[in-house]
Length: 250
Image 1 (cartoon, rainbow, N blue to C red):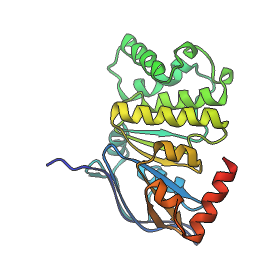
Image 2: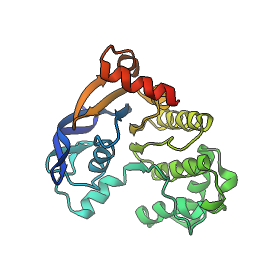
Image 3: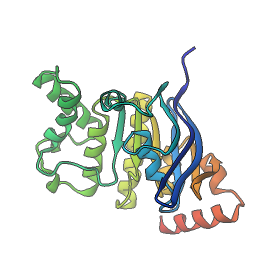
Image 4: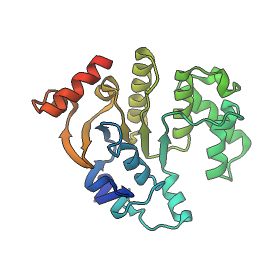
């Protein structure tokens, strides 16, 4: 029987100097599941994502992606795993000197060198249609609004057809209407392609739209786990205080 788990994290620990950021964290994410990661600033949320994609090496523990441990892989083997992972950074991280077309073509040329120019262009156009920005194909990033940059960043993240998507604050800096649109777009893409997603966010509206399940990192550990409703309706004083502040900001 095929393994239903996309991510297995076993006893993961990471520190920077004397600061313990992740302490013996264990977690599983099923294939096709959307997991939201909550936590106050500096509680290891982005570090967790960077460990999953291999940008940071944990001090101890194991990370298994789709049945393959990524710990101690050489760069060539790690890049093979990364081909199936998309990462949307907070800033969208577009190349300022490239047009939208060139930004989206870049990961295709890098990961699939045998593709023809027509195949690349067709894929770029198709992916831009998915995020409703086909008209922006020859624009420069400086010509795009914040919401458009997020959509283009998302398009570039999914253009290689990843089975796993990692989102670091996908709606940060956006107005509430655009934030809701981006959240709904992420959910639609996940449903369309049956991707597994891990989403770090402070945006409760985004989480309510996207999440199948949520965890809360506190004091370098997973302190809470459940559905969004279970966490937001909890009588736990810490959670009540956290989510009341998030609702006020929303």
